[in-house]
Length: 124
Image (cartoon, rainbow, N blue to C red; front, side, top):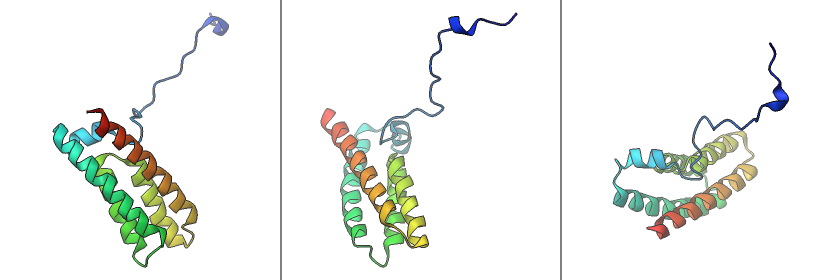
């Protein structure tokens, strides 16, 4: 017997990976061993560092790929996975010789991560 599909109420499937937003809270907690004070400290340091590195990248220094690589590693360490992906995208775009779109993507990702960090630090 074929089911009557018109009578079934469909609902979306849950995501395969939870979307915490700009900061993966699960990854952050694992990296800080659940120490909430350490979480706050590394988030604040990352937020400051991300701004400094992004400012350096705006002028595309000779070591831009290295700077992007540094930002990628720092972002992964705190769970800022969109920033890490954007920094990796910039690394690849620099190798290809056309970094403008990748730099804009990185700027957006950093702004979103910093806004989330500001909310997180202000909420406690």
